Image (cartoon, rainbow, N blue to C red; front, top):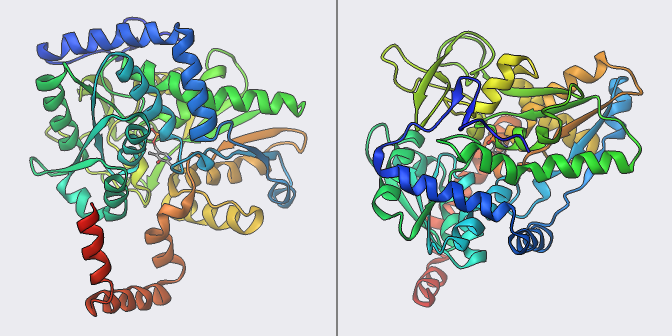
Length: 424
Ligand SMILES: *Cc1c(COP(=O)(O)O)cnc(C)c1O
């Protein structure tokens, strides 16, 4: 376990919070460390991982693709086969379980694209906790499928109307709620960032991905030469890399959102290029994409989950020490990777994960046939049909949406909607 020194990773990390949040954070830190040494807690976590999340997730040799590329063997960790479709459930379940041990009855969370909200809502439904998700009003409008999924799981989604009405405003609102209600409420942060101990906690709950991968490759008698993960806030990557961070091998690669290319506002590359600067926001220090006034800058990416102005502090640190090599993958390269893995291997990558897939497609041909790359498919791509269909089949998709709208306007489902409303 790589413990951060007083919450710092080099100059990054820390705990820059208002006085009112000191106590809840200290209580959380103590409870987390107690849980991680408590065999009853670990047993319950293990059972939920097996029976509810569906762990271990498979590790898969992409044989046809590896042969086609003629270089290193590509293996894919199919994290997207976890219940709810992505790795975020690992952290949501872990933190919700800690909260329950602390006697909390209510969970709050922030969400941008809605993926973390969905995972949190599912975890709360499973564990019988009340759940409120703060989401910028702009995101609520853009991400209706995830909003309705959260509501299906019984969560209350609260549109945030302050500031620019996006993720950062939802985080501020969640912090405010936590400060006012921490006696019964836990704030469940969605990635390996925020004030200490969140980066440590999220890494530990996601490290199950890396530990399984290590064991699954060892069982096949294979050495890992390189590992590749996509990096938004950094939770799937830091969990995937965790068992190897303090080793010199394998090579570790992080794929950032390169958007439409270099230049301020065109991407979400915090490590590649010179657009990010050291700053303190949302309770911790890291590299942030900022505008001229030091406010959160504009970002751009085809994948909502990689589209964040900051990066987990430990990843920023490991990037600066050179342990993790970062590369920016552009939108079109990620789309191409979705198509290549789907057609050659029958696995549908989420847009985020496809950034890692695209980087593996670049690395493999430069390596030897007896070397092995493992790619983390952090999520599956079913959720992305609203992004991929307009790209791959634009005309048919338009016709489909139009027909759907006409069908809804004709009101044929209305009697059904009314009876569901009555039953709820
Ligand atoms: C949210 C998300 C990411 C990015 O978040 P990290 O914290 O960097 O892992 C990546 N992949 C998928 C499928 C996601 O939902």
